[in-house]
Length: 181
Length: 181
Image 1 (cartoon, each protein chain N blue to C red):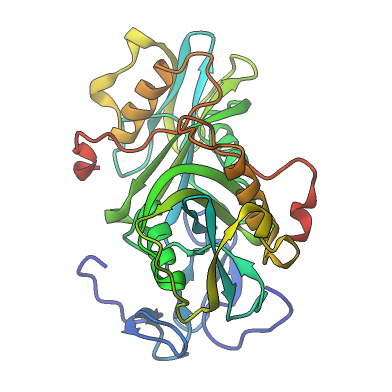
Image 2 (image 1 turned 60 degrees about the vertical axis):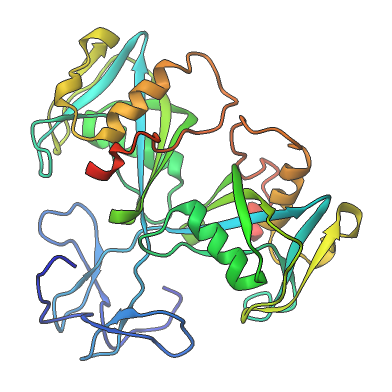
């Protein structure tokens, strides 16, 4: 996809029989790698008036802060995936609440589904993908050290939603800074 | 996945280095097929008080009625995908409105994002995947010949939402008939 030439596996673009667009096919074995957008699930986890953030231990954006989020896995729901990420990245037990945002990032073929969640107790601790975890009051959030725009957008959305449950999930802001995501 | 033994391509379950769960790997070339849930995008398309439905020309559920929906493709947004499906399956030009539903179907690793849409004009015609297309008033909808439960749920949700825009998308009803989807 980015200039690296594959020498094995699906690497030839062709239109499979019965399809209407090019797919990546392995010329050695005929396997068709249907590629579709990936779903990222995440949770803005709240304990009282504090927000749970994790400092990333892995690239990209190592050392920067995020809330728990990651690729949705097979055979789980979006809510279960968001709760799993909170457990894996921050050892936090959470109850998933309303859907805060649906962010389309078509340039990287991702759809982010971000939930608000309440922590079931105050415990948190870094998982394998986190250097540290912490609870931040609003004015303590490390705004300049957040890993992604989507993290900031989600936190901002949550701040304006206190107590609400029946609202449309927000999308990418129209200010256009999605382009640097 | 369903009893068919693969003889080529990714077919061995193993945990790749640096990963934490089993993935399907090709023993011939080493390719790792990361599989994640697929996103289905769809649109309940409305023209005045009528709903656009397509009779499926392909299996599964050939001959049954659906609104335009299908797999989201790379490098598009969920809204663009839903509009594309309306165009491909029903030759309908639509304007995508609010997100009506997010249906998690973990047993088949799918997430359905269903929008309400308004048709830009009354024209519709079957695409390659449809036997016919038609506009139905509410009491004309072929309820007993709908292709999937998700189609019925989405239509029902839309009926209760006339004019609303700021509402939480609905999920799978708690009556549990998702199990037969």
